[in-house]
Image (tube, rainbow, N blue to C red):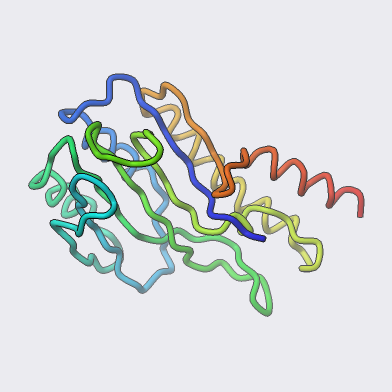
Length: 191
């Protein structure tokens, strides 16, 4: 069963004053989809996820990051979450393998925003099946390796550019994703 895949970052000295600089760094490093024709949606959510957004706007592709950041700065507050729902390109299988836009959300949490986990930046990658080989699909291992390389490049770029205290790549079920991937790859090698 597929779980949602997340990348969480905890940053040194993350404050209401510097949080949007960290978010800007992450957005500028993110490999936005070149294939998507769907708009991206940017939201500012106050206090916690139960509250309605105080700002929401759709941005046509390609996303103009300056417009997103200008909107974020207008609502800069330590108790807010900044969420850009957008796309990046991954190999996916329907009847054949195709490079296809895949939904992703890039979130920045202010230090006073209430949430279950206390990460400062969180990237939601959708289902983890996009990054796990599936023996019943021909060519799965090779195409999934390409998706994993894209994910690892992004993690490396973010690690190099942000004041990272710690990070975690994890599945919705709470399992460490690297353990889940290792288990899936071991199963592939046994076949």
